Image (cartoon, rainbow, N blue to C red; front, top):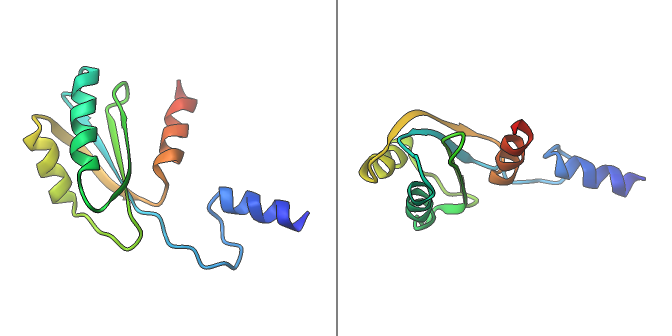
Length: 111
């Protein structure tokens, strides 16, 4: 039972007394993405960054989520510049403590 509880807590991102690195994901709301080609272009640019661990682009909700590798940082200004350079506008940007997969699941649950 204890092992099951540990697995559930880890899945939920809760502490079990085992040191875990904090997840950092930059979540961006992007205006101007209107097609799959737009989303693919942004995803490709974000994946090309050395700091990037995972990327998720949700065209319908106009969300780009960039999960950073452990110990890496990426400024909001750098992300904004990349997106602006690709031809889109950033309406909101924030760093969250959730994974790309958690953001993906949450947007799927909204549908």
